[in-house]
Structures are given as structure tokens and as C-alpha cells.
Amino acid sequence: MTVLVLCAFGSGAAAQTVYKCTSDGKVSYGERPCAAGTTAVVPSPTPGDPAAAAARLARQKAVLEEVDKQEQVRLVRLEKEMRERLKMQRADAAARKKCEHLRLKQRWAREDQARTGGQAGQVLSLKARRQAEALAVECPG
Image (cartoon, rainbow, N blue to C red; front, side, top):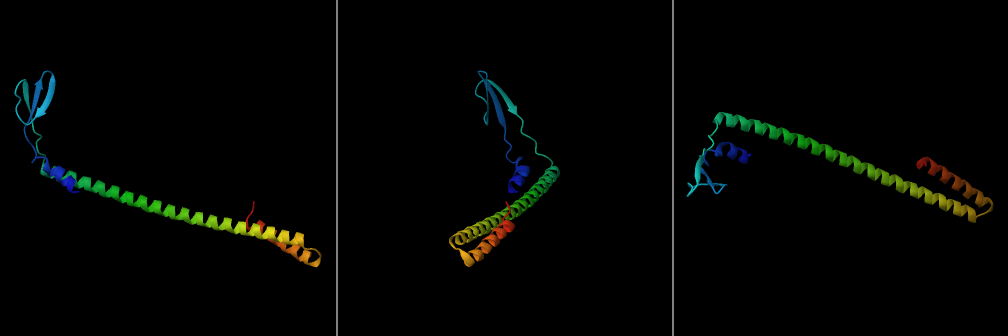
């Protein structure tokens, strides 16, 4: 903001005479009159109307505030999207972990069933079937 104020009101204080010199087809600008060649005085810019400068500054401040507000809204939206994405990633990771655990339990139940015969084999067969059903419900596909 200070820069805008200095630019708006400080231009008149820095006005100096500038000389345009042409020598050997080359143009140069300087603070002193030319030693040789063509000299032209470049007119200083006239200071603007203070009321117009103040109005311009007010408009620039309003635009800057609007841009800042829009940037804040954008940042809040981005942060919210990032939190939602992170939440979904965590939920996906938890679901994958649960599915892997169920697959492991089903595999162990089938291995136990294959090693055991008789009455215990039937119990383990039921357990393996239930593990397969639980896996199908929790982790389709």
C-alpha cells in the first residue's frame, strides 16, 4: 500500500529536467545539456490532480481488497478439498487393509480345513465358507 501512495503522490517531487541529445545518429538522455550535437529538452510530466490521484488510489485499494478476498476464498476451498481428499484416502486405505485381513483369514480357514478331517473338518469347512461370505460382502470384486 505504501508503494501505491508513493507512486501516486511522489511523482511530482522527483521531476527533473531531462535533456535528449543526438550525436552521430545516437540518442542519449541525461541531466546536463549536451556538449555537441542536437539538444532537446524533454518536458517533465505534470503532476496530476490530487483529487484524481486519491480517487485512483481508492479504486486501486478496492481492487486489491477484492483480489485478496477472492484469493482467501480460493485458499479456503483448496484446503477443504485437500482435507476431503485426505479423508477419502485414509478411508480407502482402511478398507484395503480390512479386505486384506479378511482374505488372509479366509485363506487360513481353507488351509485349516484342508489339514483336518472328520467332524472337525466339517466345522472348519463351515468356518471357511463363512469367511468367504464375509469377504464377498465387505470386499466385492
